[in-house]
Amino acid sequence: MTRLRAWLLAAALLAPAIPFLPTLSAAQGVPQSIPRKELLILENPEGTIKNAGWFNIWAINAGSQSNGLQQAALDTLWYIDPEKGLDGAWDNSLAAEKPVYNADFTEMRVKLRRGLFWSDGVEFTSADVKATVDIQIKNPNMRFSAVLANNVASVDTPDAETVIFKLKKSNSRFHTNFTVRWGAIWILPKHVFEKVEDPAKFDFNKPVSLGAYTLHSFDPDGKWYIWQLREDWQRSSLGRHGKPGPKYLAYIDPGPPDKRVIAQLNHELDVIHDIAPEGMFTLAKQDKGTRAWFKGFPYGHPDPTLPAVIFNTQHEQLKNRDVRWALALMIDVKAVTMAAYRGAATISAIAVPPTGIHPEAYHKPMEAWLKDFEIDTGKSKIKPYDPTVGKQIADMLRPSMGDQIPSDPAVIDKSFGLGWWKTNVAAAGELLTRAGFRKQGNQWLTPDGKPFVVRLMVEGDLRPVMTRAGTMIVQQWKQAGVDARIDVAQGTLLTRRAAGDFDAFIGWSVETWGGHQDLSYFMDSWHSQFVAPPGQPQPLRNWQRWSHPELDKIIEDIRKIDFDDPRGVELGRDYVKLMTREMPIIPLMAYNVFTAMDQTYWKGYPTADDPYANPVTNWGNSRYMFVRLKPAN
Image (cartoon, rainbow, N blue to C red; front, side):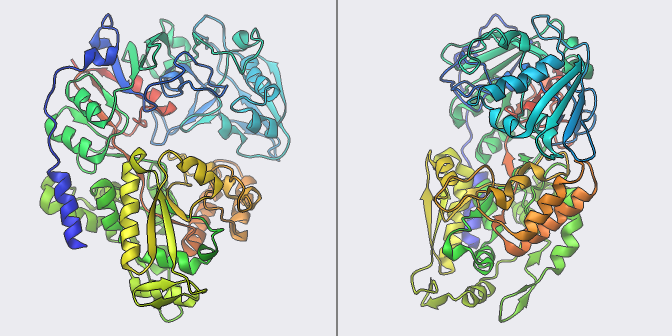
């Protein structure tokens, strides 16, 4: 394993440099009439859009959400930034204040900002919010119709700045449907949609904007979209934070990873959404003007998602937590991070991403409990947690990478994470033996005498970082005697994930707000009421199809308290303890996104040193970046 680590590190450090090449077709076809010094060029990770002229985000179609539509033109009631935010992670956007609930959370009152206008000059009012709900409930095939129909009994608008939602049942988290984390229920213009015969077939082209930008032009073939700053940008909710720096935004399809790197080296792509670690290393080496989230290694922005080994706990052999823990103890996470991210990963032993506010709310406060956590294998008692794993990864990289690797313990914790589980194949064997398994030669057999087979599903080339992690884990399981196999679901992972057609897979079922401690973003959907029977499609997020009475109680207790109630953190820590004991997923690390930002034309990007926004280009929160960007010269 040592030789493998050394090889992976050498491969990362010696990745071939990409030379400067001639300019790429005038910034991917963007009209040259736009002055480059006024233009911010960002990657649209959705690539080339098939139905390029479709802007009706409320109706499901082949159009794009990440072409600037949700980042620049749309708006809703609230935002929670995955990081610290411009003025705190919570931002009252179209709403003038936080939501106000009645005592039993069956009514939510919203006070709206006044003086906001659509780009066609019509004032935004409570009528737009009511229309957003009513139109989608009346049209069941629209994007947000189901969640609104299931929750909303009626919407009252006593005046232009007040909206009263009367709910069908208590729901202390109803406001989160109108709160942007990546996206949300966006507010539609009543004065436009009320004139449309069928809102589900309406393309909304040209879109009327409520954001600070309006559509300038787009490529009919779907390769680029350009948005222009409104002359009346002050009449958008973003305006209160200041004037956005770029006059124009271009969201483009820059092509495959190598072309993205070349485009940024040629200063034709200001912000790359995400590239492989090797591409980031090339940019850092060849262009000192490129900036990532971390100034040096590990570079990438840790998203509030948690890649993990997700078990299908309805699988007969994986129902037993001893079996799941045994598979966890066979893993060397250091080798996994080297395989996946070339070491540029932020690890997490607990089922909460190590991002945003979570290290302070969950990871650091749980350290003492994790150090004392004990497993009885049936033959011995072990304390599996090693609090030094993050430091070990940094130390392993430092001889080859020198000053790029931080030495400050606090920076190491932030960059590489805290601890993880000690590799302990002997203890894993004891747990399997207690579960009725037996070893024949070097092969583990199930209680019925068959080889213990685990298929680990990965996405293949569509998500190479996770595929490399899965390949390494399968190799480690094989070495420990499990008949482990890689199951490449190229293009079919989402379908198979929902159907439960897997033993285990690399992905995430934990997604959080990041900038807020509340865990209901994913946890509410883990209630046993939503777990599908074997063979039936699983609703969103609980891909492990796992339920537990203690988890149900935690979820039900969270439902009864306010979003900002400090008891939510305590209940979240109870969840962490339960997940650690039961191990329905094996947490691995944050999903580090290698967003590369070129400072040739623009400066002021969000970074770990100034974490005022998420820089990842398809997030709705990335709009806050625009007001802090200034011309570089």
